[in-house]
Length: 202
Image (cartoon, rainbow, N blue to C red; front, side, top):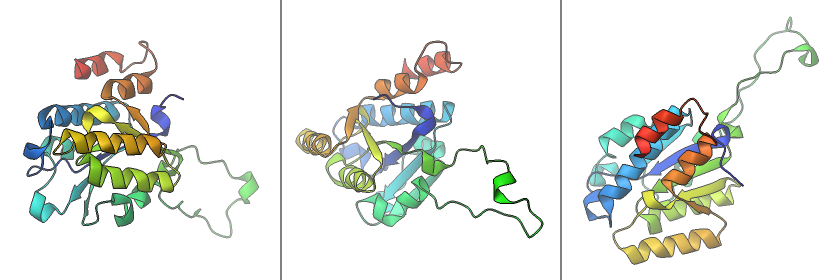
């Protein structure tokens, strides 16, 4: 099964200014998160961010925050319990109209794709064994397909990070890398965004 950009959303968990200096391989992890967000914006994939207790840990990295459509401030470690699911799967809007509207079977179908049809959640963040793990497991429970971008995730220790990956894989998440996501979203070198994407990756 390959990722499809038209069915994907990107969630970036807690790349916060006061947390990142303590994160194992933090600069590389943050660089990959930025690349992911840039590729997502290039391909019109929705990008969402979360911040854990921002009054204590500060906001997310400014460049990354600017690439997110919205950023959720949270106090629970798992973002799904704090409203993230409503962003990823919004309630359908009621049909407009009045008594003079055409009967439903004569109305033209709406062609826009709503966010709730984007069931593949590409997720990355810190700390991998706490907020990233709990958010991803909650999304799996909510019947999303979860793809964890391993080279854009970390924890304060390598052991905690790796334990999170083991548990996520065992729970049904797909483990991928930044380049795997980018090239699967593109599918081929004839994609109009291919050259721009290569510039970001290189």
